[in-house]
Image 1 (tube, rainbow, N blue to C red):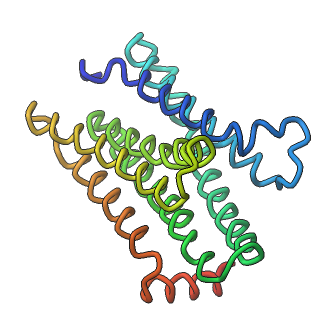
Image 2 (image 1 turned 60 degrees about the horizontal axis):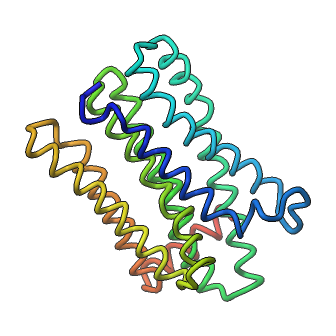
Length: 233
């Protein structure tokens, strides 16, 4: 593993802390009854926590020379990642119908930006990581890309529940944090003459995500979301 990334597990652990902080007042505080939550919320939460833990332990296996363990856990992701994609889709569908009850159809289409971009971007980064699994620098960077998608759900909720930040601003701020981290990693690779393709892709995709969020009220997105919901939700 590249020297600069030998302690990358600390960053993933920080993301885990952000997730636990953000979901405390909106989820874990309701333990053990979890009134008004559906089974998909629990399954999705368990899958995402398993993904964060996977991200934390995999670099540790590499730096401590436990390559076989790294490969075993890596193969486990062949099951976990598809299940995460299914859960993201079901969460998107559940959220859509919930918003139709609590808000407007336009609101439901707006929130589809978050759910659909998470679904497709996670799938993209994981796919790129796996087709580059024998190219360690590329593989590692795309896996780091999947971790940046975790900032919004956790930290965003934390900002909303603890600092009364609106959902619209909270998700903007967390987008900017993820973009900034990807940008810093890219600049570092440019300076060190490391491969720049992975973080370039990650940065551009994260910027495209934020662009969609800014234009969630636009006619093109609203029309697309309406058609998508009609076909799949």
